Image 1 (cartoon, rainbow, N blue to C red):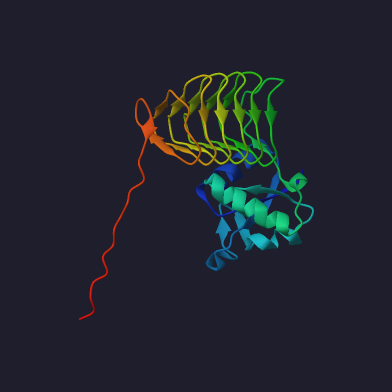
Image 2 (cartoon, helix red, strand yellow):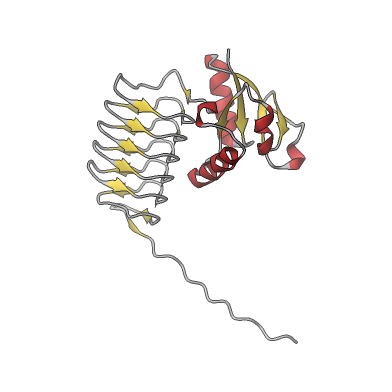
Length: 221
């Protein structure tokens, strides 16, 4: 059985730990996290072995970045790349209940939890996270580091951009797109294309204008 190290002490890491243990996919030897207070702590039976940079000390173990934010996962992968860690070092964790027929592609570092469904000809990039009961329909194309909260549903032919985040129980109409680093809120219904880096919420989904705060410096007494 291949050894696996989970990066980040997070709720997602604990879910992955439980999943791979029950399925026997990997032998989880521990976790890595930059919080020095966690060093040596036991998390659900697995020890925290050190900081993220210590991944270089375990050349025979696969790695899985378990941060909920796609931007955060991207930053960690870039950091590990600078330490000489190649993409081939990353595991892929797929719950046995996940349905994905031949012709679907799932990139390295991706995590698919219970009851995720890929119908046909779905392409997932690297380091994608899909929480339970996500449904991706025919010809969907998902870029690296995208994140799907539980219950997300995509129609056919949808394009999801790099590090985009889709909230719990949101849905995206067929043949539309969600741009790079965009965010779709919980329960939103996306009926038209979401541009890069925008946040859309509601039914039908619409953009939230960025809040503008003006701070007035108080005079010294």
